[in-house]
Amino acid sequence: MKIRKNIPVLLVVDMQNGFVEESELPVSGGREIIPVINRLMPLFPVVVASQDWHPPDHGSFYTRYPGAVPYDLGSLGGKPQVLWPVHCVQGTRGAAFIPEIKSEYFQAIIRKGMDPEVDSYSVFYDNHHQNPSGLKGYLLERGVKVVFLAGLAFDYCVRYSALDALEFTSEIYVIEDATRGVASSSMAETKKEFEEKGIRLIRAREVESIMAGIMSHLR
Ligand code: VGL
Ligand code: ZN
Image (cartoon, rainbow, N blue to C red; front, top):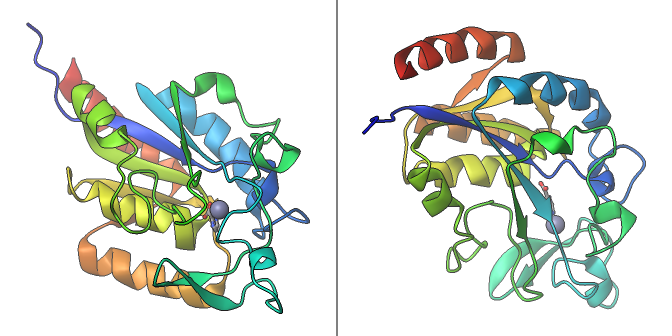
């Protein structure tokens, strides 16, 4: 039997119409990372995408709270909750993958945020850390030990997915020119937390050389 080790995955987080400029929950510079991610995907033996996939009455939407405006801080299920604009509603254009992203490289797609009573930033768990998506088991069964992350948004779904990946590996790389964030304050907070937890920020051009090193050990 071939012993597989250190298999790397590229997690492509929420590259959906709803998160690009002038869209539902706009992330500035979101479109700029499309070609970067398209260039990176073919380098990876495992590529998994996530898709924010909310019901129309999701509890993270400001529209559920009379008098609220988008980006207010509210609460949901007893936890602080940013009240987001309505975004990524199941089956709508906002929820669909950005047409320019080469989704043919996605080997698996994990949808999240379906439960109206809890938000789900991480691709691995809901925000209460109660319901797993199954992605951890999928990756472990495929021998994945190194996690690279790209996509939207750096300070929310990329952040919490990277932190949850610490459960099964300490080799986590967030590709800084293949991600964009919602707000500068939470982006600064994210960078600080990544530094404290040993999650590394790298550039797309460094990925190639790191991957060459990893893949040479796999042969
Ligand atoms: C996201 C806020 C709400 C994300 C999803 O993909 O980062 N952010 N839903
Ligand atoms: Zn969402």
